[in-house]
Image (spheres, rainbow, N blue to C red):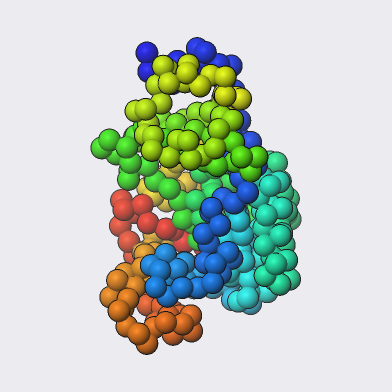
Length: 326
């Protein structure tokens, strides 16, 4: 019997939304790693260059400088809090009350006054009037909703005519060839941990996750892999198992997103290359340059590159980010 069948037999597993599955229980969705939000910019770190690339990607593809932006699913405040200095106003919308509280706390600490965060019930219509926003950013958040197609319909409704959506997403193709089943260990805000078992269905574009909440610290499982989570192992720690929950998420491919966005009514659906990836490659070329040690110098290099890269059409088969225009 596989581990998923065993969990179904031994526990009363119920499907829940992503906020209840994990996001409400995390102090930080990013493990406090976000540049600017949690850490000072460090030109010696590749991920910090990529972060700046994503910043300018969002700004340039949505043409949102000085405008009103909806950031859907901001997590710890990303990209809301890094784009805020460049735009008129950003509203971060999340179904997790914990994530909204963290975003508000981070905005206050950073002294950002034009970023506002609010909660909504997952699956509901977005709490905004038609034609409210100049742009929408969504970074791996649409697939966390109960109905991604309905979410895109809502994006279309609240965007102003000519408004732009910039969509990053997690395609399942990268997990093909042996990574369909995986273990992820999340540390929770109460000192417990959650063992998350992924069952990815690549061709059908959906994932079932099982979350096993355990009254043991994350470090107790750091060296474990998916294959270590067996019925025998779980029997041994059954006294420490607090609950088992289940999440179903749909993960559309680039082709599926392209088709959906066209059906919904977007006038243009444009798959392009990623500004974040381009900035990371710039780091690979310039990491030894002592002249690129501060944020201003790095930004001066990244900005023009991202402006060009995000205008280049990318094959949708690569599952690249997508710009959609209402």
